[in-house]
Image (cartoon, rainbow, N blue to C red; front, top):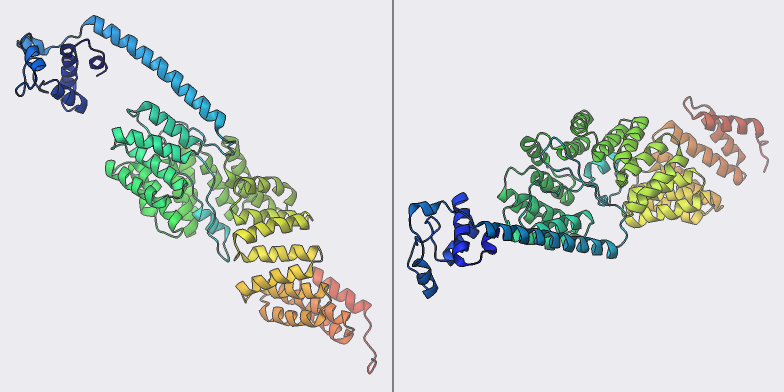
Length: 530
């Protein structure tokens, strides 16, 4: 093909194209070129498939040999030498231009925080995904960590396993994907698809870029094209599953993930995704099996270790979670979720000071996740930084106005800085979202206590007692009511509350000690005394 482009005359060009047609009779460029030259795709030079249509064609036909020996085409040596020289020059020039483009892009590109890493070779022909920023958690009134882990999304693989004809456009498109320049990636990858519309991996790269830009309908269309081009392309099934989960976090996509693993039993990303689906379904044992297989196939797969840390945290194995996340960060320190899990594990162990740094990293790189701000605020509050905690918890409330735990936690922080009005507003907001919350009525009573409104405090305490479901909750409400009654001078009723606590067999020890101390220190009032 290249030799035909540098031939001296049309005869030499025809010889080159005829050689190409012998190697690949269906090559579109060879067939089109021979038709333009008036040559048949199956004929030897000089044998036409139809009449010549130009004077030049008639002239060429008079000096051609038509013997069968001419079918064995030999290319003149000087033509080969010339082609090699031109090819070398083009290659050198292309490298210089491509280098200049890459350098220019790196100079003007804004500072990046999280960069995709190049996937390492594995036993699977399916490329591995790279980490990126995670999408936000759907806002709800109450979300467990298991729910969070189930809907957390990772990027679909976008590296192709085969070379493509438009090498420069392909290289620039992949580089744009790696640097999160999604629009540019789509522009260049579409150039590749013009030449090679059947490239399933390119269609999937375009789908991933469209997904990152929020164009979910276009992403779905590109995935459909990828599967139409190659129904056995495993990453496309995983991509479709993840795209479906973005639309509906509770959707059943297990069949797509299973199909991906059926086509490629060494597809590590699919094992990790299926583990997340098992976690959502509560099948932690199956999730552990998939993660074990993923790590067996690729022990350097960071997302597999991140997910193993999640699983350990759900199994109350905080040390295991910490070890898994440290392993993940040693492989790829750019995965925000790893820092969130590490901070949560530290908090569960009571190490709030150690939790501050990883949680700060998480909210920096995943600022749209309200759970991150909630966890960071709780860690700050545990460290006595109430004002800073209020600021972080306000971020969580702004992102998720129906997150009950954020209101309850910020209410506690307001109490810590003696802001009773702010505390009451938050506890009231939590109660409005869930009328069965003991903590909301109890917190509102404490807010009225510090603002010296005993009547309102007693009203909220009665409501809290009606919602108490444990002896500990009842004891806390009774202790608060005893304090409020003491503040109003109603000592007899206060002593009655202290006696009730002292008679409770399963009252919390710290509350029981306070009740006994108050009974000893407070004399019973004289009957009839005012």
